[in-house]
Image (tube, rainbow, N blue to C red; front, top):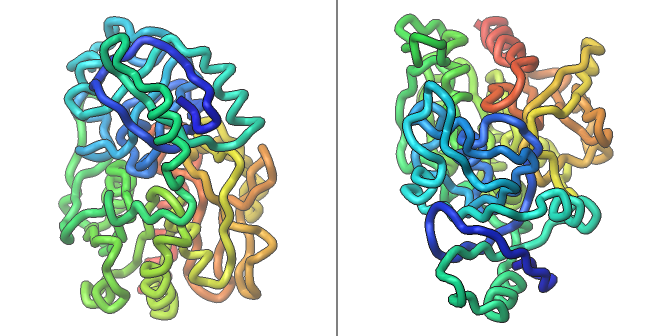
Length: 371
């Protein structure tokens, strides 16, 4: 049920119940389990444009957080029995276990076209017995939901206390590794961090300390890090930035190397004096071309964001480093005089291509240059 009163009927699967959130869409052809467990989807219902969702099942390795923050999912085809040697359970069983509501049999092309032309819509997703739906009440609930603009959801998905991370990236036949000889110490501020980001930092030679979104600059500096990472996360950067902005500004002023992605990128921009705005339908998928203005190279990226930094608002001393070749929006920035940079997309590639893994090495180079 969309807030404008449009109803889409389909076949429910996964958990039963009713969920309200912002309806968005993702164009990735792979990685549905990573997408569903990305904390950046807090408060959102995900429409998958790829028709075959669930065909490789689920497993305990392909998750980005233990407790998914997404509200549910909408797909074209009914979920079939999995056909993959890594599958440990069917998608619908996994969804029910995690309280995620699914709806299949929807004309997702028509639904996505509606979102592309009309922008985001709040929606209610319901799964229950036939005849149990109060359509009028659902429409009222969708209209009454306040939406993500002005909403701080990082507090809901961040860790509650600091912890150490040493797990490295996955290899077929070996699983995940362990970092035993780190040469650098990085503090990762958790605004909704994905596990594979932490794995990439560990694989790059870091001892990683993860700290809550509420940590102050003094809290971070007391850990004596060599560098600071600002993670991805959900909802409105301006709302989370009301308390995180001062922390980020203090870390930039400290002279440490700072690397931000997604929400971390947006809040870094805000801390530096730029502005952010909500997009019409956002960027979500694993096939987004981005141009690196420093090298001229084009990389195919994985993205998930509904807000963007206003390119024209960048203050003096801050320059754009990456732009989207889809719509020209800002995809990266750096400070000219300090070892500070950020990107809008997800270089950890979970899911998605690995074209952007070099950014972790760029971060390591900045840390080593200060040593």
